[in-house]
Length: 503
Image 1 (cartoon, rainbow, N blue to C red):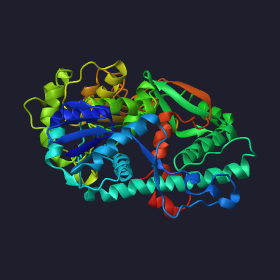
Image 2 (spheres, rainbow, N blue to C red):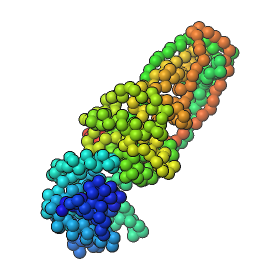
Image 3 (cartoon, one colour):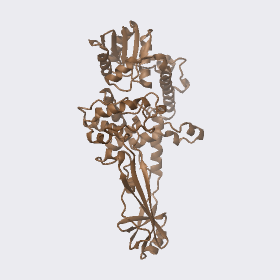
Image 4 (tube, one colour):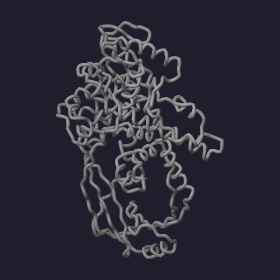
């Protein structure tokens, strides 16, 4: 009998249906030579300090650092977990072979390896590795199973991370609590939480110590268009008023009008962090909420594996894209029209196997999305539109910059005219495009009237007092971005270079 073990009951049921294991038992499905069982995420965890020695039961500086000679695992103390593990252990002890059907990632590998170790499994183990839960993907995965040995580095990486977290968390938490908490609270230290807390604390210090300073901006309105002095900000009111006085009654003259055509490529596909950032920015969903929603869409076969850190697709996905687009076309019929009957664009910004390791970017599977909640629909719509947009042409625009003077004081304005919307048509009915929606970019995208070099006329100057503003508090979106690029906050140059692309 071959035992398949999945990470969740819902995933196990899909796999069992494809394999023909349709007979339900307590904790597993059976049939066609297979027994399909499941975990509930983590069933096992690393042992706690007091599991190794009584010396580590009590918190004391003398016992630090705590480093076991060999790390061990134990079952999580929960009655439901213990019952399910007893089923898994019995099946694995009698199995002729095991297929690890855990989530295809570092954490999924670790979860199932620990369960197999705890169950004392001795038979050969194969690995199912899939990026979506569609029936076709599951069948393809079972037709190309690999030996578990090929995923040993992934397991070692997950194990190393878990052990590193244990060593830091257990030791540093006790150290800081004993030295600084004065018996009032536990000071919890962790690999992710402590640097993240430091980001927030440092930002708070910047805000608290910030002292606003006034500055003055000289501008003028000519032909209903605001021009700003290129000199920038005046640090004293007197300086600003002196400049204002020189231009008050003199005409505005247009010196140069330059037009520059440009293109803007479609936004990149989503990885998990960029999706969480976009959902927080657009819908105020927390990172955790977004992860739950996208995990649910994945388990319902609507989107691909979510816990990814790449925004690229491997080249072998390209031939499948027409059928994916066809599958989602019912909900996006108008957006599909420009793509019908044409060969899909294959851009290196989208398809690059060298940028894909375990999994590719998050995309729809092509399974029609039905019966979605509003929140699910919002997340799905972001992913679907982003996928459609990458096959659209670049947006073509023209940037116009106008320079003018009033008595040697130079002024400037600029505007952007969309010549051909390209991929922006995918977002035309929405409040913002997929990317820049801040005030600065809205200013840039205004269309200017036609100006001619040498023209001159009256204008209305203004001198505005403004105040410098403190750094903004982190939102969940900006904090996620800061965590992702945390290396840039490191002062040591060598370490900063090593962490350049890591959070």
